[in-house]
Length: 231
Image (cartoon, rainbow, N blue to C red; front, side, top):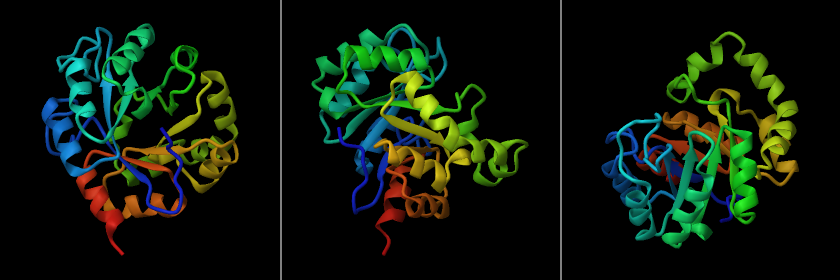
């Protein structure tokens, strides 16, 4: 799957489906994201191949979700929440004929290395920072003024080569509070596309599109697509 932005808009990825309109990671949320016309639909994969953000959480099976995605024209973005079941995820993608339409992301370098070893042709994104405290839900202004955010954002261009190398990743997934033009340019010089998460406000969707990100991850993919379609 080619995630590089060319002359058009950035790709739109439904975050845990269309989680602004239905419970995250639910079949309803996945279906709504696909109906909106997303380029990819993102979902969390926990141990046991359960589609849920928390280990031990309730959710549909990975096979149920992949069956929905396979029947659409969209790509599958599987975010692995812990190490140890990478081989099973790759096998599930193959069962549904989705290897060529899939992206795997993780916040664990060891998981990234494992997936690249199992399926070298799969795009693998290293996510930063690890979303242990639900930072994906922080609105833009709070993340900008949070203590240390500016320093972290300024340091990201230096961290990026290390993150990519440690995980053998060929895609970068950055929290919106840490995503800057300098970070994007650093990744692009290495031939690495950049995904920014999680972006819901139309003004921020336009902001990151103008900065040059390759994909926008949004709880409201229908709204993000509408915003990007504006002249």
